[in-house]
Image (cartoon, rainbow, N blue to C red; front, top):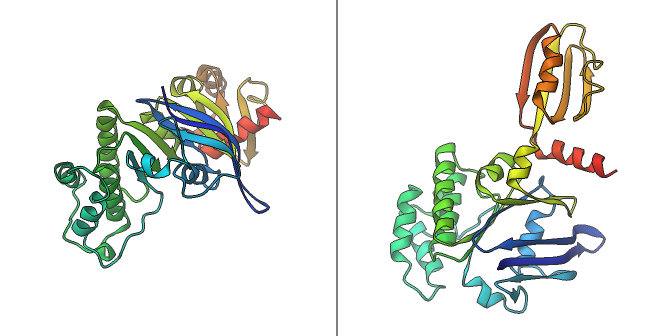
Amino acid sequence: MNIIEINHLTKTYGHARGIVDVSFQVKEGEIFGFIGPNGAGKSTTIRTLLALIHPTSGSAKIFGKDCIDFAPDIAKEIGYLPSEVFYYDNMKVSDLLKYAASFYKKDCRTRMKELVEIMELDTTKKIDDLSLGNKKKVGIVQGLLHEPKLIILDEPTSGLDPLMQQRFFDLLIEENKKGATILFSSHILGEVQRLCDRVAIIKEGKIVTVEKISNLRENNYKKIKIEADNASDNAFVSIAGVNNLNVDGNLISFIFKGDINTVMTKIADMEITNIWIEEPDLEEIFMHYYESED
């Protein structure tokens, strides 16, 4: 069963681009990644799903119901964490969470207390006195206190320190094991690879691909930079899987996808002074996708 069904969804703002012909499905019990650089259309897609904005064309369903026509009913079973959280500054955290819980016809006190302890949140403080990270913690507790069937997260880790990020990931895995479906939107590939079953990649408002994370791992990209005397691209220009090859003085850099041993054999024949191998950012991967399409 599909919990989310998005079909040819388009949203334009006058002559400005929002999203164009976006289609993908999220299965029940899945942790689904939605990734792309900032401004790619992730938040626009999510806000349309939540009926915060209306589509120009196309449709979207949650729990088999149209997102616009049945928005109030759908909202009861959704937990949402936006990329930026804004609250009543003079309100205490405890009062805000009680206010949020009042929207649901269930007793949320026990779960709220558990989440507050997990996130180490001081509920006696006023919202205005909280750091960005602690405001994000409030958003996490607010989004999960009613134990929603569907959790929608838009850049959820911004502002969280590494310890809290790990605690938050553990919390999401726990919610998923209990049956919650999760849509996890991020521009950080590592987070998505770590948590998600499948992923939709969006750039410039369009879906580039929908893939299983296992395939993304198998076809993993590496960003390689080499410092060497008499640096030249001759050793790598003919290797299949080398893209964005660049030489700048003593530095050679490129994106590689394939058998890493092929590259390492070439490197072993060079007199190098330093080497860096790391995960490229999404923009670099997307550049390769578009070059392949072209």
